Amino acid sequence: MNKTIMEKAHAGIELPEFTEVAKYERVSIDKIMEGVAAGTIVITKNNVRPRPIRSVGIGSGLLVKVNANIGTSQDSADIKNELQKLEALVQAKSDAVMDLSTGGDLTAIRKAIIANSPIPIGTVPIYEIAVKQRLTGTPMIKLSANDIFKVIEEQAKQGVDFMTVHAGLTARTVEMILRGSRTMNVVSRGGAFLFQWIRFNECENPLYENFDRLLEICRKYEITLSLGDGMRPGAVVDATDQPQIEELLTLGELVDRAREAGVQAMVEGPGHVPIDQIETNMKIQKQICKGAPFYILGPVVTDIAPGYDHITSAIGGAWAAYFGADFLCYVTRTEHLSLPNIEAVREGVIITRIAAHAADIAKGHPGAINWDLQMSKARFDLNWERQISLAIDPKRASFIRDALPPSDEEVCTMCGEFCALKMTKEALPKKTSEKQEI
Image 1 (cartoon, rainbow, N blue to C red):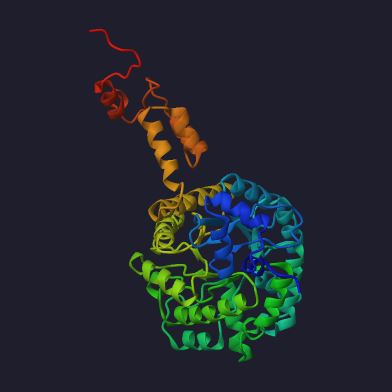
Image 2 (cartoon, rainbow, N blue to C red):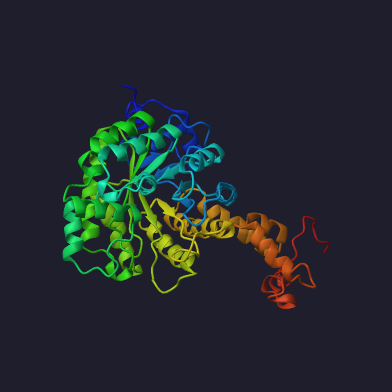
């Protein structure tokens, strides 16, 4: 049996992926290999991926990574539009992308995204399974384990790098929801599909019951498992409740089983969490899942801001990343309202990168603060060209400055002649390399 990336790291076999990640992160290759071997770092890279991609490390001691979601729906299924979104998110420097398509020719859409993406790609296979069931007129409750694993293997063969599977949502968790008093019940689409199946069939989750079969596919194609949070809270009043924690305990068990099989795994985290509960959530996950990389949506810290949820999630994302989250899934301003357009995708990546970078600074990651230092020097020097080139979004920074150009190009229209930096520089002693005459 061929060794997986995790097993090769454990055996001390150096791979180009380890070297590439170490160089990008400015850490030693030994640190990367130790993390991959222990399961606290994952490198999402399918071994049959049809085009070269950047090796992306996610996990302990590394820069916080950002994921962007794209994908069609029944109301909007244009492949060209999704490829334009892909181009926009890559230009905005997202570290990964997930195809969550549910409309149109899903195989063709995924094939096109895989062919054009230079970064890792993730999917949620149960979405395609649900679409296939709908097209054949078969209710989701008639789904079989074979139906699930057939789609998972088909996506693996195409080159998908990581997959979200809601294997931790068990019959016990479903009972907790039925007996409980959640305001929003189940908000995860994948979780809702399985909730229905378990409820009506009165059987255990087939992904949990057949988890070893899932691990065999992951080993074969080097798929990184993203253990989904089907019980994530969709309202801040539901955060950190019994169903959420019960599922997390099961995910901790599944992390252990994945590591024993040499399969890389990360764990997905809560969606809506008040600020005061974020630290607790991050620390509980890291403890229960033994340091597995934590992949979170947001978290959204308040429910009252539709149209601004890219901001509510960035607030939560910065806190979460500081307290241990490793991978932030962006939330766009269209969350809870509609599919994002190209500009919303680009903006969502930028805002989530800001949250990730803020956490990287606070955690003291090598090199993170240097970017800010260079910007501060450029600002002090009133070097506008340098400031714009250093901006996380140069296009937006340039547009805003050019929209209201100052009469004095040395300053901006906010302060004009009363620019604090300009006045201070005028009051400072002049620097000269020549000796002054006495």
